[in-house]
Length: 137
Image (cartoon, rainbow, N blue to C red; front, side, top):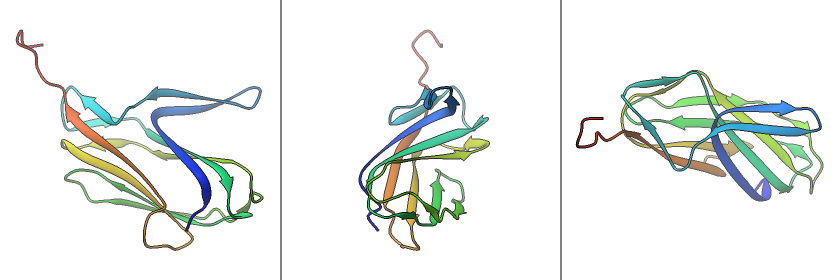
């Protein structure tokens, strides 16, 4: 289901609502998360999804799946069913607390809307262990 004409995602440690209709996103990750040791535990991990030019007037329910190397998938059912107005924009913030990284490899967060089997949105990222330098640090 194509829910919006355009979308983009940001993976971060936190998102906060500020005065003046602002959002502050803290600790933004690129396409990889690097940990000193694995397994590792973060207090939370946030995927923020910006939907631009919505194709539906009512936000459909969603299924969110976190797929993490060497771990069972985490599946969440999110009942939205809120009026958004077609053509408008929406920001979805999805939090996983705590977030555990068990092993290196590709991880992804998939979002399916309206009971669809194939994900509408996929955010991929790699989990890595930091490489030691020649002097052992």
